[in-house]
Image (cartoon, rainbow over the protein chains, first blue to last red):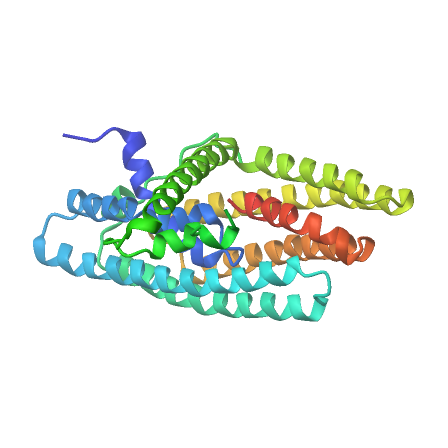
Length: 147
Length: 175
């Protein structure tokens, strides 16, 4: 039986949200919430079962999802440390622009590194799936949302 | 009773589960336990109300923290010229944080849309990410610039009253 579209869409966005938490060097707390909540990543793995039926291939793709989740978590932990340092610096009246810029440069470097790693995994995942399966895992986002 | 006779909440948390209470100290310990229970209850009530009052998200939360910051400026900055300048910078910060939020949202929406295309070339994805990253760096740069405008206008003592509120606004803007 087909699941309701809205739930499928929501599940389909999970991986890309994990992906974004690292891509966005601003590191939104909302993104971290998705990541550390755990449930949504689990839902994505369940969704994989509904779109890929061969057990061997599903297992292999599940492994890539695991790698993606672990990488995203690792990057986010590093990013969180950077954000803590930056916020501490901003709270000090005597902090200099150079000091703050150093934190931002570190964040940008992490962003570049994590972006490459996450894109590698994204395309590795894509290689193992048909276009139709990919569309099942990542349906188009719902229209009409606002910031 | 002197303060040092009372265990603090930290002491209470460090207390062993088996307390050896002897005659002379029994009454004092019971009193201390009652006081700790009261303190714990007050803390729980405080935490619950703090959590429920911070439910606002996004622009509302940013606006609320910046309003608190304006209030702190009005209360703590006596110099009228600097006060006016600080209030103006807070207005600017609000606009800059809104831009940053919008850039984040647009970035997320557009990357999601790109990702749904099974055959989107990696070069296209990378070019889009480069462009989004640049937009975000620009928006972030304006926020940082505004921060230094604020610290330049406030004294160290005044900044102590404002820093925590700015932090909350910054965090709310990226949630």
